[in-house]
Amino acid sequence: MNQLASYVSRSLLGAMLLMLVLLLGLELVFTFLGEVEDLRGGYTASEALIYIGLTAPRRAYDLLPIAALVGGIVGLGMMASASELTVMRAAGVSIGRIVWWVMRPALVLVVAGVLLSQYVVPHTEKMAEARRAQVQGAASAAGWLNSYWHREGNQMVRIGRVEPDGTLREIFFYRIAPDGVLREGVRAQSASHVGNGWQLSGLRITRLLPDGSAQVATLPQRFWSSRLTPEFLRLVTLEPEILSLTNLYRYAHYMKQQGLDSGAYFLEFWKKAFAPFATLSMVLIACSFIFGPLRSVTMGLRILAGVMTGLLFRYAQDFLGYVSLVYDFSPALAAGLPIAVGLLIGGVAIARVR
Image: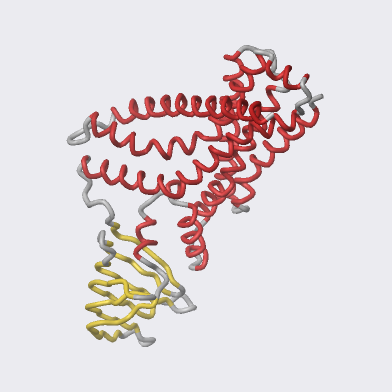
């Protein structure tokens, strides 16, 4: 029985990896064709290939659920065509046990996806975007942030420039009273992160008095206590999709505490948190297809059904995500509902197989 379980798991893992390679190859080819239109200056075809290669881990991570679905359908379909599943059932192997054997290689993909998302994708995506911007002649070096607005409590803060080493330049503070009236403006030439805040240098303080006059003072230095860190400022320059799960959680909660719009970051956090269950739900649906309606159809039709189902799942999750941002309902529900539906459909279909 152990040899049979190992055989099924190895066969399904090979099919899933093969589908992942094929789907990723198609994705990279079409992406390269799109990048060809942007070739100019130093951004040559070889640079475009390097850029696409660096983004390959993120694209592979996005394709994992579909690859698991199509690979499961193909692997189990080949066994069904060779009557291997029939022999297993005749030998007394339950459908539940076969499903578990199929789930084991899916768990390998789940672990690989978590590692990619947490440790590989954030670094390769930053390298890809930085190199692309550099060769295309971007106005500022990678890691710079210009004209960033931030709010903390009753203060609006404008940061003129964030340099790659984390130093802030040309910082403006606008303190607003509860009645909405501007009370104070502060300009600092630079700021360096120290401990739990920033050491401001070269300050010019303008206080607006109730009688309409203004008082101007200067200070060489002042400490600004803030939870804003250079790391958070670096995250601002990155899309939520390429941040690691831990950075998404920390930054989304920071934005929520400051009263800022954190919906996109929470949505992406829940998508990444539920991603393992998405892969498992796709594999469960694959099993239900093979033990049900796709048992005796051609391989081409099986692959088409798998791709269409995977795309439907992906579009449903994206659609619900956009709806949650527009109508302000739970991003966890938007990310988890398609997965729950997939698990329910697959589980019910498997339970009804006799």
